[in-house]
Amino acid sequence: MNVFDPQLMARTEVLIARCAAKGITITTAESCTGGLIAALLTEISGSSAVLDRGFVTYSNVAKTEMLGVPASLIATYGAVSAVVACAMAEGALRHSKASLSVAVTGIAGPGGGTDAKPVGLVHFARAQSGYAPDHFEQCFDNKGRASIRRAALEFALSLLEESILNY
Image (cartoon, rainbow, N blue to C red; front, side):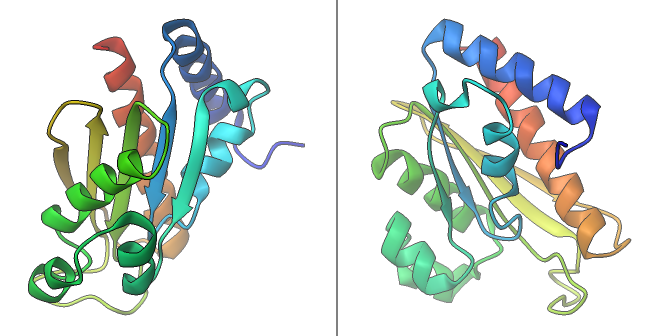
């Protein structure tokens, strides 16, 4: 029995095969998704040739200790911000042997949201060796924690799919 639905599994299987064929290795830096991206990738047989490692950096301290995100960035902009997402993506590359990273930080709720940063706000970044990271911001409908985390997982998968097409 798979944890994820067949459509998501099929997309991920194609992603893993394409990465393997191109010699692309991936690392993840996850906050609000709590390791779901890495879990999805490892559902696919052969993913060990592609997934180098995943960082679950739910706390601010973990972002700093594991990824090297400066505490001053978190203090100034908040953990849920473009600059922190980019720093997470860059840190994941620095602390791994991967060539491509995806980072996710957001507010999955039900609490924690503000007018400026509502529940459902998620910042994504992806980075490739030798390039500045790309940032993406999404505000998913507040249909519950599981829905937001699922939407973030799917968006992160889309970023990885897009990256390997242009690699």
